[in-house]
Every structure is written in C-alpha cells, then in structure tokens.
Image (tube, rainbow, N blue to C red; front, side, top):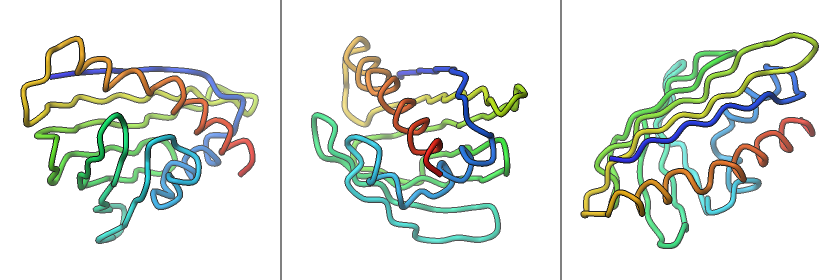
Length: 141
C-alpha cells in the first residue's frame, strides 16, 4: 500500500479550483501523464469515470467520484488493470482574501507486488507537478 498527501495554499478562489477539479474530462489538457478521461455515468453529485494514464507504464482504471461542491471531491476505485485500490480526495478550504488551502490525499494498492519504496515514488513523485498544474489552470479559469 502507498499513501501520499500534499497541502498547499493557492492564491485562487475556491470555486475556481473546484470547477477545474470537477471537470474530469479536461485533465488531459493540463495534467502530465493523463492521456484520456471518459465520464461513463453521471448521477447528481456522483460520477464514474475511466482514466487512461501513461506514467512509466500505460494503464487504465475507473473511479467512482463524489463531488461535494464547493470544497471536496473524493473517489474510490471501481476497477483497474494495475490498481486493486485507489481511495483519495481533493479537499478545499477557503482561507480568506481569495486564497484556498488545497489538500490532495491518496491511498493506493497495486495488483502486482511493487516494492514499498517504488510504490511510494509512483504515488507521490507526481504530486508537486500535479498541484502546480491545477493551480495554473485555476488561475486561468
């Protein structure tokens, strides 16, 4: 099992960040390694989406999301070819003056045996660039 979490304060309004994060199908436009996101089913604040990624290796998975506007998006794994578990969330907190505390948390298990240090690196190494990409996209929103 690999877990990672990162918190940063963005100089961007919380609603703009939520809008960017909840537009799952736009992730390939600004997130490194995300080749395609397809929304399979949408019902109210619940969204099932399939992700095709290319991070060291190509793989796909489907997540069940819960969109809790304007401050939380959480997910659990529905199915995947490499992952046996993927639970996580984006949590947003308005800290005033148009700034937002953004926390990304994830807990992942792989179907194949992956040494602990490697799985931790796979899960956490992309976090800084992903946070930067979300911040830049939200600033333009």
